[in-house]
Amino acid sequence: MKIGIIGGTGFYEIDGNEIELDSDYGKVTAFSFEKYSRKIIFIPRHGKKHKPAHVVNYHANIDALNKVGVEAIIAINTVGSMRKSMEVGSFFIPDDFIDLTGRKSTFHDEKAVHVDMSVPFCPVVRKILIEEAGKKGRVHEGVYVVTNGPRLETKAEINMFKKFAHVVGMTLSPEVVLAREAGICYASICLISNYAAGMQERLDVEEIKRIYNERKRDILHIVDECIKKLPEKRECECRNVPERGKI
Image (cartoon, rainbow, N blue to C red):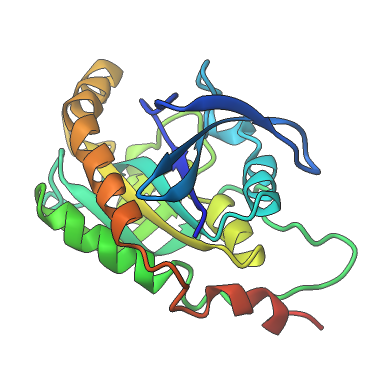
């Protein structure tokens, strides 16, 4: 199995050969290496200069991974918690999401493909991430609400969001949808780096950086264990989802 890793805030490069991948949406800078006899492709989602979430070329990233035969993607995301019980520094593995970004979230402009999002994340990849994250700290599950950014949310927005979600972030969608359309297994490990607006005195970007720097090694270990434990042959239905959505 060829595996893709999409790194979020703080994860801009990794040991490996820097390569350029082709896609129908532009060139993609990536890093290639082998681990446990598997080919790994790492893409820094924001690029080396940290593009803001609303201008990331999600279509190019997923299309490029699909073209080189990646079958599973492990995504790394940073989120804000809307629950005091989901503390800063802990891990969050989303089981569903709400997209409020308004971003284009499909590869299909010429024909209708109604991809089923009832189970948006690969259950096999999620299960391994949950197990491995639990060995490194507290791990939570729930709903991720995606906002467009780059500004942070208002207190009023958070008071509304927390009624139907647990964490808030800017990068999960359209990435997860595009992976689903491509038939690629996809799951995310999120680091809770801060409490959302109104839940702490102020939101400090330097404090957010400190948290993910403290946890970076643990996240890489979790991803490494997931690479090791993913089955060689896919044991889920992710690859069949796109075909079932065709009219």
